Image 1 (cartoon, rainbow, N blue to C red):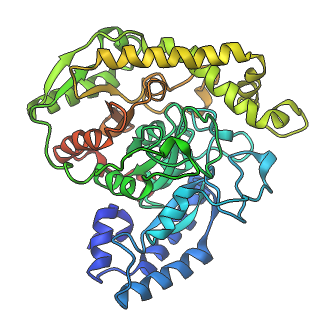
Image 2: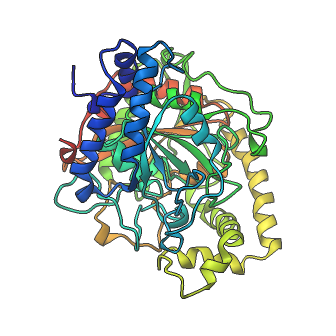
Length: 464
């Protein structure tokens, strides 16, 4: 058998169920990999080694005695440092909250533990999740494992989960996505990310960036694992009213149906301007590949350019995060990231009229956008404008989320899947965008693409 640390979760689950693999050995392997790779990659803010080993021993005994709680019992997972666990430190990526003890446990974490999963530790995030590059001035920026020599952006805000999964320090991880924070690290780390629809997964106990736009989601090796994790994470939660009335999806039912007969929208020509040539070439090959698998490719006219939404997105996010942490942001004695503080403090200048106006405009624009894609099943875009860039070249006044933040704004769902590499060996990514609550369709399209390619199976040099 391939070393367990390199197997996707759906294969690990089969090995554990067949008693060919013990959760104890699996957790030990991941903890050993973390110990070896963490000094370079810095994906984790804390490692839960002692408790993880105890949980693995308990899972092993339960499974051997016929008391497995489900197919994912004994599977480890990495948790973003925005997810609260009662009694444990939850920093939200901020040095100002180094000693902040969580007063509650996130609903999604309870679901993971009820399924028998094992928490390996908390992973790095951009401070308060407010940034797409993945940097963190005070707590450290994870190292993208696809370049051993140059410190490149890991993508944010779920930077640590992206690096941990890509480097095989965890089989999968939890991220959150307000404007791309699951898909950006998935894209730049050569793995798979699923941006869920608002209300699909409870945000109770997840430190907020924007209560309007926040969505937790899976960061995984492949689409099948993303579908598995979604089945665990989803579900109505009375503590998050966004979830009430949302019917659970069945991501596994149609996963292997293929794309024959589906109508997929092509990136409008105007949106190709300024996109890296290798990104566009990989995107065009992906569109051709899906066409060869039986999908019909359709040209669309969209009501707004993606970049035109930045102002409204920024107003909503800044107003909502400022309302939560104004005291921290306005206190210059607090050690806030110098790039994040001004983004938060911008919320102080947003009037209630402007904020409510932005929300109203969003509702009107959602209708117009949904009308424009009424004749297609999904819209295909690159996930990122460029491959991962060196940390030293980042312009923090700009966002890398050009192709991702509009998905949150329009309240859609999307999968990001690896679709090639640059000549220099950096991963590229395809984004599959579907209407609200159509995650199974996005996963189905992604599965068909991954079944025909092996990009998602490549392993970064630093993980070997």
